[in-house]
Length: 316
Picture 1: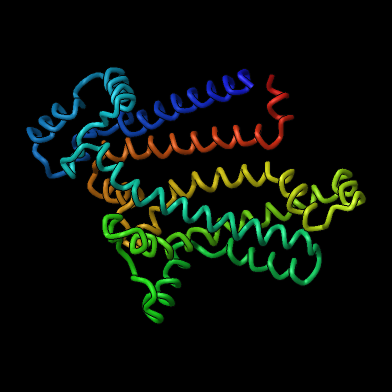
Picture 2: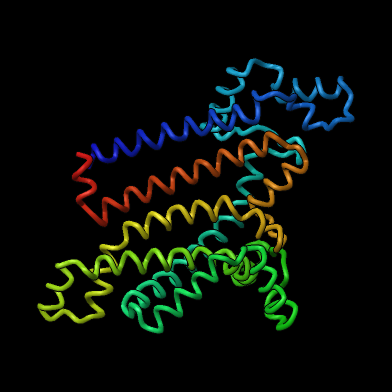
């Protein structure tokens, strides 16, 4: 187990290091004056020079890179040019919206996908299977932002059950905040659930054809118990792979939906920072999202070992 963890941890650290270097090269070293971009084309040379000195952009690239890495390790991400606030505080505030939104969307997606996928697999080539897979194909084709607009038209404009946008804050109570995130989470979950349900169906069908499932049924195990207790667990490795990728995508891909619903999340912060040429915020937000993707994949690797001990044994 220790060898397995060490290998995964080494991969985790190496991926973060490569990601940080790539992000730094794209936003700091490639042609173009970062200070000029932040100030705009009409800024005076004196103002551009003063901003470069203020944010350390006049120092050598290698020194700036290691200063940035040291700041990330200590939580000192610098000061936002547009907001005049510490970047760490900005990211922390926006995560209070984005993380619950992603968790809600992932929960909805997992519940829908596992239920639909297992049901379709247990009714293979019947009308329920064909109908659900047809609906899942339609769900894959629907863009998140378009479905979000449909939800607003139905539940906000027509039925008046939910607000069309905005976030009251967690200080106003859990239910008002949860309610304001429900439609955005649903709009994000539909496409993810459609993809995941098809993966679940295929994986469960493959396991149902294995000898150990037939043996369990021959020993008297009910169809439901064999399906949920044996087939689904052994089909979870490809399902977990997709779920891990989807959760990382939900964290990084909420920009459009957060703008549709006017949610003050991390995606909207990135969009506003790009519009404001606030490259310091953009750099740290992109690195944070890259780190979250790597962390999620690391957790998925650990779940692999918990579900299937053969994977852990193969790495020892």
